[in-house]
Length: 159
Image (cartoon, rainbow, N blue to C red):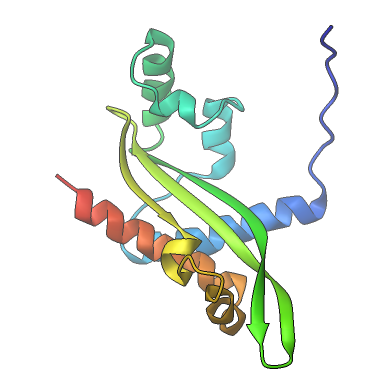
């Protein structure tokens, strides 16, 4: 038996976090000359569908949805933000540090090709000691660094 549950409206803090990530991630793109569509406009075209819907190549429905989104953008960028706890060994003992876990994927809408991917582990490193690096920077710095890493990957894959 399935039951439909109403999804609560995002809190003010959630909406502010979305805008902060959008601003911090978009800043390097705008500085490079990219024009960005408002997230709400893109969301209205996406209609709360998973990002994979637009990256999927085969179905006719996916093609139509990509074409609709392509009217407002050439590339769609999905940014997933969470955090992870990492244990750092210090002289005074182990310390648990929370580090941002950011993953970004850019797809070209006309043909659903993934044109770039980046994550905070690309920027910070993957080993547990990377938390030491993360302690030196705040989430704003790391978010912008991931955006730059995504742009770098996109330019490396440009054809």
